[in-house]
Length: 427
Image (cartoon, rainbow, N blue to C red; front, top):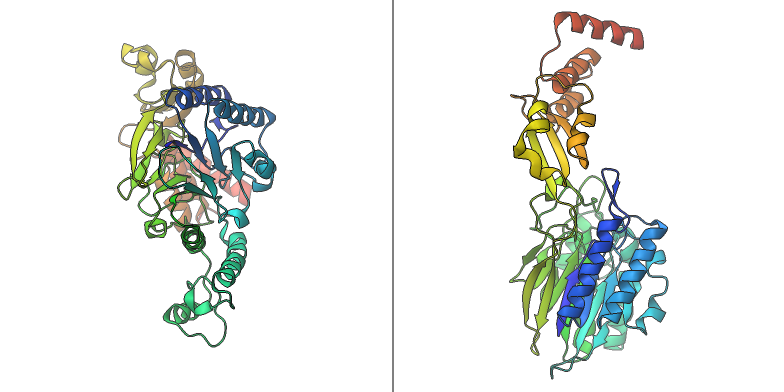
C-alpha cells in the first residue's frame, strides 16, 4: 500500500501581507501529479487545511478542487482538522463524503471509528484512525465517555476506574498509585499529553478488538523532541503542551501535523511531513516536502521524502543600503521574498521603498547597525520588564532603533516630551 503524507496547507494564508493562494494552487497541482505518477492509494492530510476558522471563499474553492482532483487521480483521502480549522465547518459533510472515498474528521467522538482499507497486497486490512486536534478541555469529557462506553462494552460489566489512566477522574473506593498521584496534583490542568494518551489508548483497544490489522494514526499535535518554527500557533496560552512519543507506541505509522518542519522519530514510524510552503523566515533553509510511505504486508514502512520545489524562495540579506541596491552579489534574490537587515549606522530615509525597487517581494526590514547585538528586540523587552522609568525606557528604545545612545540634546527633548505627556517629572 502506498501512502502520501502531507499536512499544514494553511489555505488562505498570507506572508507579511502577500497572498499565498497562487502558490498554494501550485502545491495542489504538484500533489495531484505525485498522486498520479506514484500510484498513491491513500493521501493523508494531518490538519490545518485552512489558516483560520472562517476561511476566505477562494481558499474553500481551492480545497474543494484539491479533494476532487486527488480522488480523480486514484487515491482515497483521509484528512483531519487542526488547531487553525473549525471542525464543525470543515467536517460538515464527512459522513456522506466517506462514501465517495474522502474522509474529513473533525468530531472527536469519532476518533475510535477507523476507516478500513483492504489493499490487494495479500496482507491484513489497514485501519486508519483520524484524530482531529484535541482541545484538552473540550476533548476530555468526550474521551472519558468513550472510555466508559467501550470499557463496558468490552467487559460486559460496569466501568472499572482502577484500570484507567490518571486522566480519568477517580471514583470513591479506588486508591491506585495513579489516582493518588492525581489527587496530590490537585486535579491539575488537563494537557495535550493527557488527552492524546487517552485517545490512543482507546484506539489500541478498538484495534485489538477488530482482529489482525495494520494500524495508522493521523493526529495534529506537538510531540516531545519536535523542532518548531516561528509560524506555528501555540497550542496553549503561555506554554506549548508537548505530547510524549511513547503515547504513539505500537502503531505501524503515525502521520503528524502541526510542526512545519519535516522530521521523523522512532525509526520513521512517527513523522511530520511539514508544511508544503515556508510560512516564516525561520524556514528559509528548510526543504519543503511530502512523505511517501510504502507499507508492506507486515505493516513495516519504508519512507521517501519528496521535495516539492514549489513557491517563492526566502532570502535574508544583510548589508548597507548602497551595497544592497547596487552590488551584483544580491542580484539572485530579486525573485525571492526578502528579509533585509540594514547595517547602516543611521536608518536611511524611505529605505524600504528603495529596497523594493530592486527586490519587489521584500517583506521585512530590520535595522541592525554594526555592533548591535541582535534584531529581535530582546534588550528592549528586558528593559520593559525590569523598569518603570519612562525616560529610561525611551532612551533604551532610542538606542535599540538607532544603534547609538541619544545625545545630551536628544535626551532633553525626550525628557520634555515625557513630562508633557504624563505631567510627571523625569526624576
